[in-house]
Length: 407
Image (cartoon, rainbow, N blue to C red; front, side, top):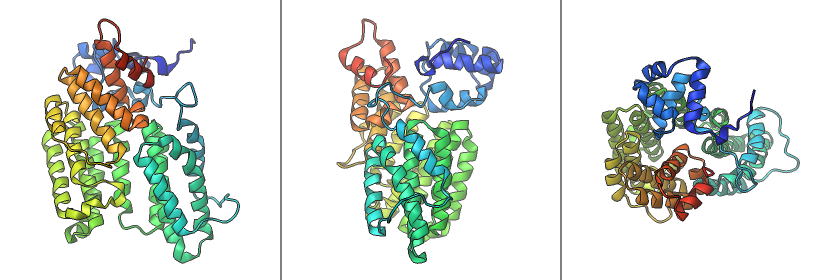
């Protein structure tokens, strides 16, 4: 059998291979995804871009593969700089696997205040989408905090488990954003395990928030919504009482439900959930400045999600209109800003505004390079721009394509 490098293949080639592997015709695949046979043919010929996460996931479900098999993720590089973050995956996986074993940390462990400082430093790296640096540092941090859960006296052990849950969440950020879906599932389980031992009353809700994201991979939209609604019900008393943590978590669950409904192509449900999240921000008032559970439940994020929902619904004009009124405050997380500029670029591209789309993609990559370079829709947007160039690539687009490893 001839060897082929999957990373060098087009999306259409991967779809065709997956279809042939399950032994179905283009007509049958079209029936499974409720499309015309000509649509499948154009996808396989790369004459039509597969520029929707929902479509990728729906196709993958119909072909009995994980979406990564169609998008080619994770996107490994050929040099140390291009492969940043991926080399740390092995050590992250090892720490997640040995979560319930005895400590292997040699020597004394730091104090709780020192661990909190270290966790905040990891948070800053994660917020800045500096996943390579997170991947390098989080395995040792997990190992040391895990040792602390064994060595600390009982009163401090619960707090150590809370910090361990947070460290596991940083590991999940690396795994999910670099395309290691199986590792993300494992990490989310560890977040839940440690959170239970920390006696965090919002642990199950945070677990649901993260779990629903992985249910997207199998286009299990109804299951994801059920998980999120169950989590909302579980904190309803605290939410009704106006506890700020409950308001933030409930708002985060509603935003996650809004994106889920949009990917399900249920516009009414998506915008209804978005309004519920906006009401939560109103109830938080000045307290929205506190980033409870790293969920960013504040007005700018509500506005950013408004653009994202329009994109997920495939409504380019509405995405552009909404994006034009979004104000990104100084100091906003790079991950939030990066996603916003990427969504804005996709909306502009669908409206035929290629130069503006390129500018937004450049801005997204400048703000959050590792996030954007490892995002399948960013890669597809760059490929679409490259395919629209009739007389050779412009210098800006060529440089972007090279950095994104699509040239």
